[in-house]
Length: 260
Image (tube, rainbow, N blue to C red; front, side, top):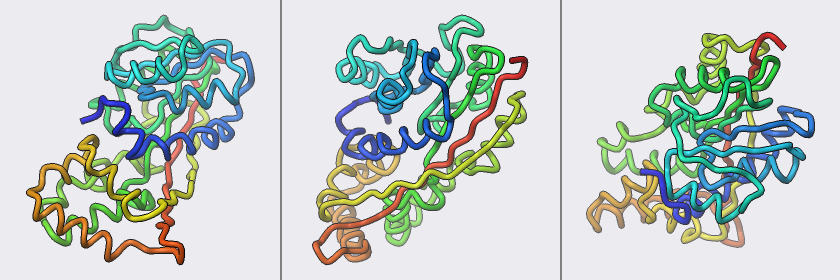
């Protein structure tokens, strides 16, 4: 359900770009490092690394041709982009100082294999880190959507990312990183405001059909989709100027490859 850059940008990409700088600040990485961005998508985290970390090199890897094309168009030759799988990176052993992943680990079929692969590519003493949305808690734009959908359609409960992605919690992330051999494992919450100009600014991205919630919205018959739209319009909080002020929380985790 992921693969086209423009719908992703309108739905969640514009918010993911705001998380990336805070994530990098938390990592506190030095300059002149070699980075790998696994599941780079349209390049939000890659762009933040280029802007704020003075890297020696950045390689972005994503399985979706459309995302890789969008990232290349946006960032040109400032980074190298490859189509590839998180569990089978076509990169040498111990070739990167930092291997990071943004908002994708919960979508990877075998998260453990992906982190093991990140450790393989990281140099001894290098950083392996990731962040994912807090689907069950304060990723408000999705949480509000699924709560409204479930009130109208019990079948929506089974599609809600909050239930489908138990990995997207700090304790689960820390357990995973520790289990594959990371040292110095730590987690943190990253909160950003997501302010929508009006209801249409909130609702229209769900009509792009990309991602679990938009795919669900577009699977509905027109009358059911309109009922969902009306319920959201009635229940979303409004500011005096008509804007909708929500919050998005991401859970971040980091570890170190032993031996440095």
